[in-house]
Image (tube, rainbow, N blue to C red; front, side):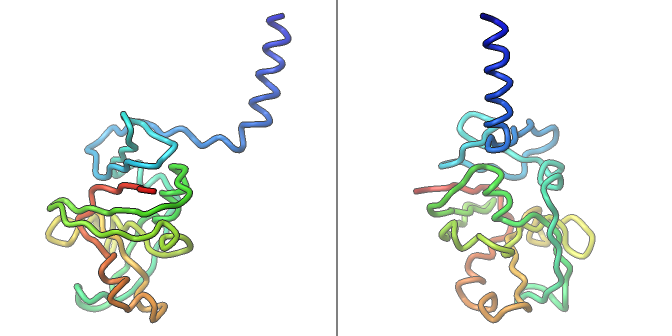
Amino acid sequence: MSRFLAKLFAVAMFVCGPVMAEPLSAPSGEVVLTVTGEITVTNAPDAAVFDMEMLKELPVEAFETTTIWTEGSNRFVGVRLSELLDSLGVEGGTLRATAINDYSVEMPVDAARGGAPIIAYEMDGNPMSRRQKGPLWIVYPYDSDAEYRSELAYSRSIWQLDRLEVMQ
């Protein structure tokens, strides 16, 4: 009987393995981002918490763009917001992004699909301090598309980001 169960388990792991989400490790450093709500992958009670190293382990996206808040062109490095949401099993709904000072904005999860925006953790090769709108900033490649140079995109470009909540 135990042999049968072992074989059944092996087959189940083979069949189900690719569709199962990757487990999320626990942060070893200071938590810089907490994601709650309608997520299926967690590493804390009802939440997914990330330190900077965990964010840097996700696929990296980088682009150069000007912003209405900084001078000249800047190179931003981070993780696509869509990539982060996908890694947590988010399928839809509304996303509330909140900053350290409790300022928040909402956007449909579908608005985060595709290549933009990113959650930037570096600007011009350096981590961003709070004075530089960091440590995390939702940034669009503003120069690449007129759609990103709109009041809507600017309003969603929340800096000093520290929380995301996925709501239905």
